[in-house]
Image 1 (tube, rainbow, N blue to C red):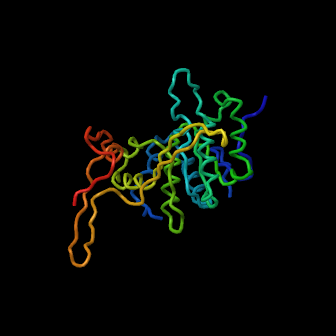
Image 2: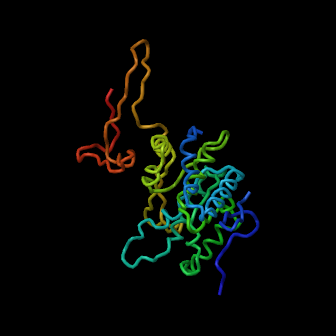
Image 3: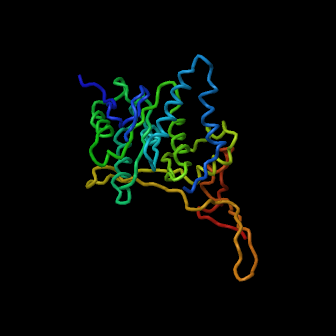
Length: 282
């Protein structure tokens, strides 16, 4: 039988076995990064291999060429897969639709994408045969996939740690492009663990891209990918400078539908009468 796809030694895919990768409006918060780095170090001493794996990954990210997007592969692959009789594996086609959508955009010539998936999603016990060819393209050199890095995160560790760290670490470096994170995960369990919860929520508001899938496009031979990019401004209390000596004003955003993901408690629900559009009081 055919062996499961693995990243070769050409330096294109990050694997937990040590094989490496091909080769801003966010002012990084040291508190956020320190919180992320501390997570593996809080493990018992007999789990020191996780600390070593984490350090190896950080070195990999620092040495990787600039990238613009990280994808939470499991979140995309399990999207709308909770129906009766659904397979246990992620929808590899669905992940590929998103990757191809990004790489085939006219404005994406300078894009480089990091796709993160846990190692278990490549297990021959879970991986369907039809998905082998998809993974081969992810790890191949044919355009446009030559601008994709597949990162297999190791067993025994939370794959969310890896794509979040990649977005925070490289997106906050001087002269590096701002890094967007594509996921519908609101990451509430992660900012509960952090000391810099406010800084993390501000980062999430400016860098998280939500996704959805529309109707099937016969020409593209895939479902249409719908992306909701973050706004170019932060929705919070702001001071407006007056013109011609008219004085300054304070703009206060009012509640609206969709505010659930903006608060640390993770349980805020807008009132039934809250509008969908943004409204402010001055």
